[in-house]
Length: 130
Image 1 (cartoon, rainbow, N blue to C red):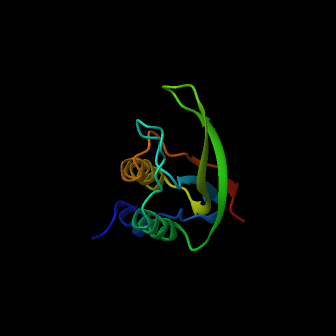
Image 2 (cartoon, helix red, strand yellow; image 1 turned 135 degrees about the horizontal axis):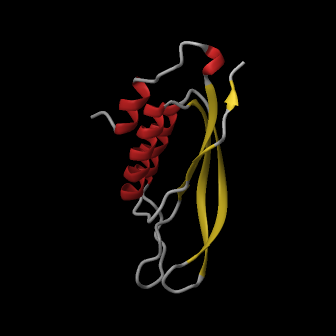
Image 3 (spheres, rainbow, N blue to C red; image 1 turned 90 degrees about the horizontal axis):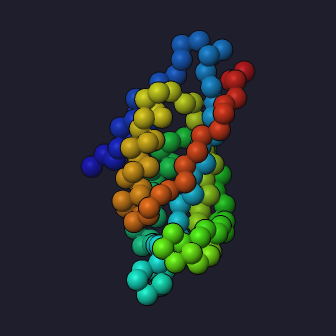
């Protein structure tokens, strides 16, 4: 069954004039643990969900970089500081309006799949393709 990522990646649009193409870097933070439950326990994200997500990331571009990273955030309800272990992906891609729209939908899919209030996903300003 095709995923939403595959749908917008297959129809990748490249400007006809290479001078107008913008290469941008997409940064995504994928959590390694779920948000705390009512007892404060943080269970690991299932391997099957991570594998599916990593496969979708591979479909975005022929190359990416991956780092294990650690962040920190303050819990909205308790005010307690929590360390957040995640995978940081940096993916170079040609950003077009349809790809950006597809990424927005995929972000919501990831938030549901990984049971997160928010998934960090950001595009760089862009580099002119030479």
